[in-house]
Length: 239
Image 1 (cartoon, helix red, strand yellow):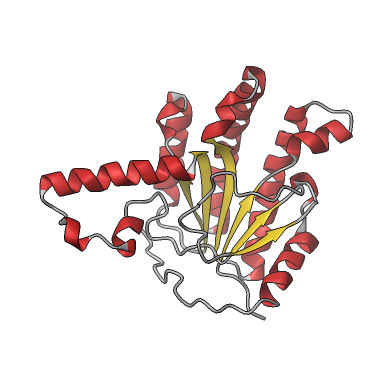
Image 2: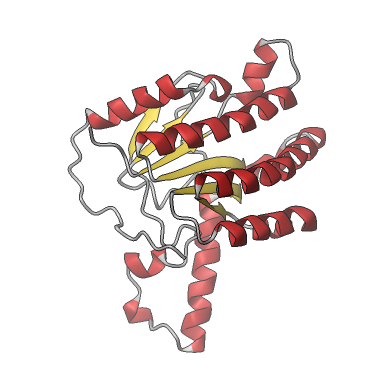
């Protein structure tokens, strides 16, 4: 059974799931956060090596302030839990996105989590936080331009491979499979460069209800597709 090496997920439907149960949206986010931990464990046991989840986008700041505040509180709490989980499961954690807009406390928690888990290599977990693919590519181009100005990079040496090294996902293979829950059929500014040759799987199941059986369905759908492109990155850098 061929299992995708890297699965990326857009965690959608937390608020609608909560509303359907007569609960506030924040309840859905809390349950959804707990489900991330479960799916990480399930994915690792299935043989998936990399899992990347979309936790908070650059566009999510436009949500009602009380919801944003609750999401930030929840993310801070999750970082504490993730620190323990990383050690327990030999899991390296990286945060993708521009963290400078986050609170100093959350930034420090992210740095601690990345530093503590840097030596772990059993499973690779990426959290896209204050992430937007267009923003990522603009930041990458600015860094690349800085190196050109500094003379450490020549413009004639720029290639797809070179550009990839400036992205937040540098050293991580491109996703083999993208999963989006809750019935939406769009990418929402998520990993646009990295998903160029990925297989897509959309399900109407909201994220809080996405379980082991649903993940297996997505993987089985991936296995039934003929992969014609062999150019996915082989980089598995353990930075």
